[in-house]
Image (cartoon, rainbow, N blue to C red; front, side, top):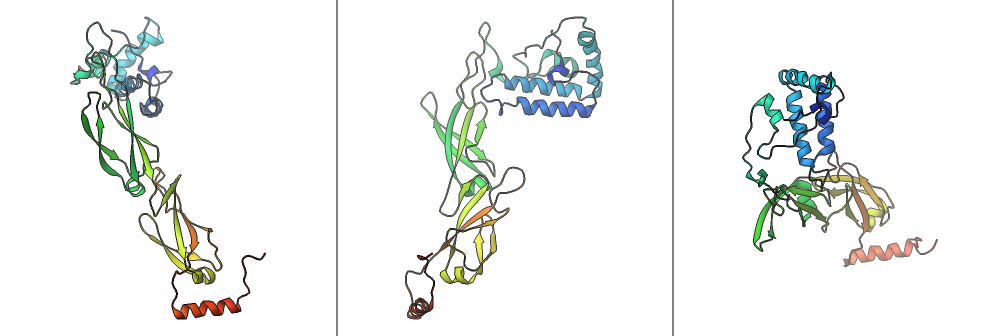
Length: 298
């Protein structure tokens, strides 16, 4: 059995570290080597398992004391050469780890390597699905059907989290092409395409919509109600506002993934009635006679 340097795995240079320092190093290592960040790296999952294994031993005071005695003998005093061991194909954790917490059997038959042949992980598969802005904002569970390599249709249940970004990918572990010689299956990556609707369009974290005003509301100013994706907001319209001008409502846009939201951006569009009553027509004719305003001059 080959000695495993848990401190090296967590990128710690010494065994004289506190539990808080071990926790900080563990979080940094997980963030750095997480498979979702290191796409295409077939060793990322094994690194995460080593990192979890190291943290489990070093975060327990009793097992850490036991491990430190071995560490001082193998590393600090350089009594024997060491290297990181390869993972046992039949166990989630290595034999070295089992010295501290006992033998843990794995029930995952896909990890068993056929004798004499290296395990080969299956290829990843990518596809795309469309969701509405409303579905992406609130989240949903969606069923999709894909054709397998054997030509059969297979249905997957995809949980789209609330506030997912346009173009973000959801990973279904082990749902890609099958591995060879006992290797793990590849993963299925589902790209989310958020479609604009007739009410909102999404640009970054901002939601864009139209604010329709009558000519007299635009000329005189008013307070108008604007519908956001989850409620209704009243905004002040200044006198003389023009078509194409923007009113920005902070915090009423799309979720930014950090507990906040973008803005709701309302573009003013002044609408003229297609049909007029006799009284309205008379009022517009009188306005036409007395008004000196001409937008085509100056």
